[in-house]
Length: 127
Image 1: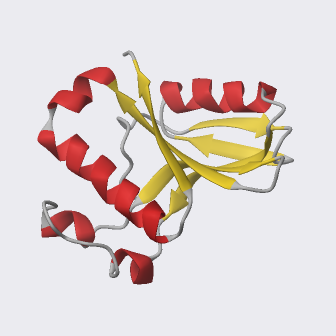
Image 2: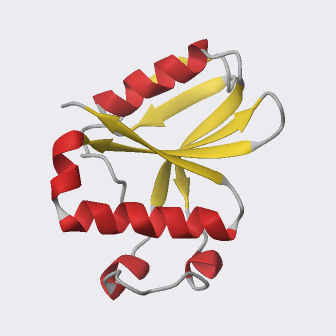
């Protein structure tokens, strides 16, 4: 699966919110997950949530390279909030925002989650 953040070796820890081991792809994702663990508004979350190919087929392709639409993608975090709504957080390093490829990937994620009427946000991290 492709992810928006830079890939390192997998990092695992036990999540009290999820009652299970969480597997993450970067130290930034680990730090964000640890932060989510402390937030009372977070009921649970999934890291590396795979995107559905059928939904990918329904999003606009304008301005996004078709190669991205054919790759298996995963969202950094899908969060189930205590109030019942669902939110998405994509992590990106500040310096990656200067690269068109990363901006296109964020736009792809934004369009995907807009189709599902899910709250979507970018979390910019300093590397």
